[in-house]
Length: 345
Image 1 (spheres, rainbow, N blue to C red):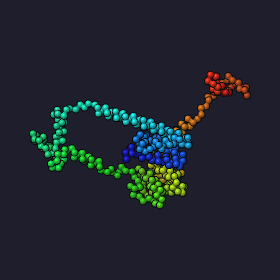
Image 2 (tube, one colour):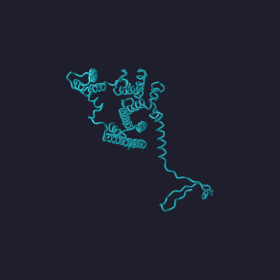
Image 3 (cartoon, rainbow, N blue to C red):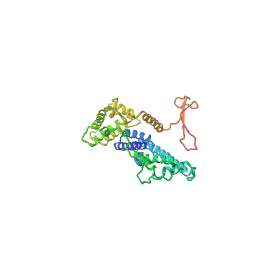
Image 4 (spheres, helix red, strand yellow):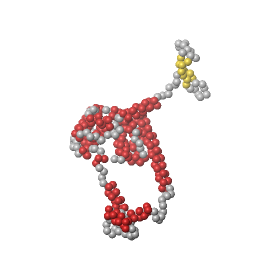
């Protein structure tokens, strides 16, 4: 899968999880998904294809102020990405146009150069012998080439077309199976059937998320995916939006390419199915993402603090209560701008 296709699938999955978390009013999942979306580099074409801008844009007026602020940060960051991408595209287009308009310095076609003669002899029809009639050695070479790339009798098709056809045939062959990711379908595994298509699909999604880039035994992955789904279904009692949102959150975190540690700890047994289901989105996040979230929280806390007047210490005033001269004071502009500031001791 190409990088652009991978980013398209990742962004689409994150937006789907964001919509489900918004529907379930799960603030923790909303914060985690928005932090992940900040880290995604986007382009205008990618945003149009996935509709991610509309999904995140709706959260700018969310009832929770912190979620609304995060959504605005995502939109602001994506605007910068799109502007940078458009600037690079414009620069590339301008460079290509300049190269195309530049004069070519090659020799004229009729100058009798060796390269021109070689090209003419290569493009000549196989059945023609007029070019090689003056030189027996050249005629022998032409016969050898024609025997390597035979053409139908009486055909005037140039020899180069057979090479082009061979290239097209190689491109038409399917990709090898080694480039595809491991899934329940590729493993041909028979997962437990609950009779509910939603639950069965959730088990399959969990299996696919844990089997990605993994060489763990099929039986282990099948048992884990079935156990995790059973625990979540026991909590919800039915396939509610909250149940689907939780499964979606687990799948996103388990198959996160930037957080392989979580997937490895789950499949190795370091984190049990019960522990995984009780973990919050922040606990499942990678160390890099945890550090980013911590820094952004500190920044938001610092920006949310109200300005505090600076307090100074002096002996120029006498305290009205203790009559001492060692006191602190600060000044504020409480009257019009042309009046002096008021001193508070």
